[in-house]
Length: 517
Image (cartoon, rainbow, N blue to C red):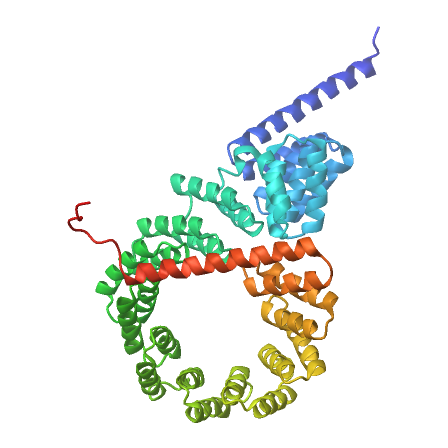
């Protein structure tokens, strides 16, 4: 027979279990309905009846978190973990709170533990994506995204963040796929898509940038959005559509200098030089205080051999703007091309009076003397400028080139090497060094310098020619022959391209009656 005390204990335990289950069930029901204020006292009652139940601790953590009591919620999550560390949910929930509080290291620890305990939980991977994005770990975010299932697709903001991560890591196709999906679902605002579009453009991925700007302009056809589309089209080598858009914009905003400038650029790309000149002229007229408008216009005038007109434009621009230095440099360059060396020197001196650090003006000034065969004065100018303004690439390069021509090989080598350090991706100083080493019959150094040139620009025929000579001196007969053949091929390609441009410029097929045979 069971004792009376045992019967009382069993009855009491059953009563407590029933009370606990009732309170717990009611608390869970309130959570499901989103009534967290009503859920809290029920869960607290269940907790009093079962203070070591990890599930109740986790539910209390959820409830306190939803009520904005983050510290209290974290306390319950940690209690649940202490009672039963093999349950993923408390680790995940604590990690989410820590992530929201920007406690990234602690959040990472909890979320990775949750992923270890329950690797198939998409929510854990979703928050690991958010964590990786927040801490600048694009590759980790991209790796976690597929494990989050459709949670990413159902969150437009995170999807857009992932598209940007794809762009930063060079995954342009993946980024474009995400953007297209967001466009189709209406899950991206024009402002956010603009940000993504500009990032595509910054990474020279112009085709998807065009797609973004085209969608933005369809949603909001403001002149700015249509202008952005036109600019993207220009970068994507679609000048005809760009010109059409810019022409329409010009009819709406005839005095907008930016529209006129890029319309000129579109016409120039289409080889419609008169229309390009007119657009650049109109841009300079609309914005006379900007030297850049004058520089665009005069550059094309110079390319068209209209030097006197370019000089007149510059002189009128000097009277209309306070930013005279770039115009004075341009004036000096034009006068030097025309052979008016004293006038060119006056312009370069005027530029240096306003900006004594301007290396291009020192180089221009030296070139005026070099063109008059006064290399000594040219070298003196550059030498003085280098002493007063160390660390300028142009000064080092031009001094090295001129010093080599005058037989000052040691000075030339030192200056050209400094130029390569200042601009490691510029081929010119390496090419001059290669020729200098050839003169000194230092064939190994010449080879190294010239191979650097061809590595940076494989289409630079003069370097291949010089390399063929260097390889021959080094006894590398087959390499010398290869370089000589490559030189001939590149020169022929460039000649054929020049002829193509000439034919396009001079005329096209004629229609009419063919003569009888």
